[in-house]
Length: 125
Image (cartoon, rainbow, N blue to C red; front, side):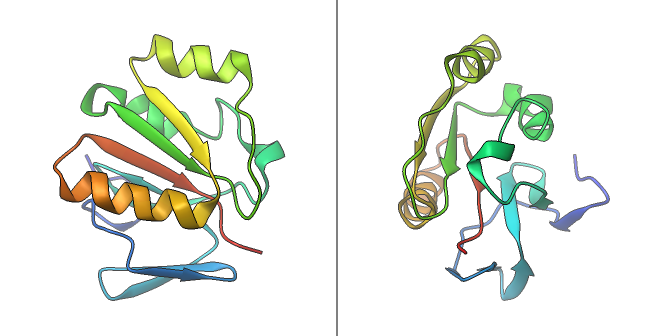
């Protein structure tokens, strides 16, 4: 189920990242990204304050194909609000938040293991 804004209509590992960009499948993308079963999508949030249920609407749309959402929080740790955690849990998803570097690595390992994982990754400042 690819959407028109997908950078790549399939799920792939994150090959690299830097200040304001990600690399995947030999491509580069500026800004934050969502890595979902439908592909790698541009993602509007730039800070953790912008991460809410609306920002994760594509994740909720694909929740049946997922077990776990990893949220990359930029450079700093971030506590997911109880309301958002419960909303994700009600959709059948476990969630973990960690700095983007750790989140991208964890996503790659779990994807390589064949786990049903998604990542919402804030670009590094």
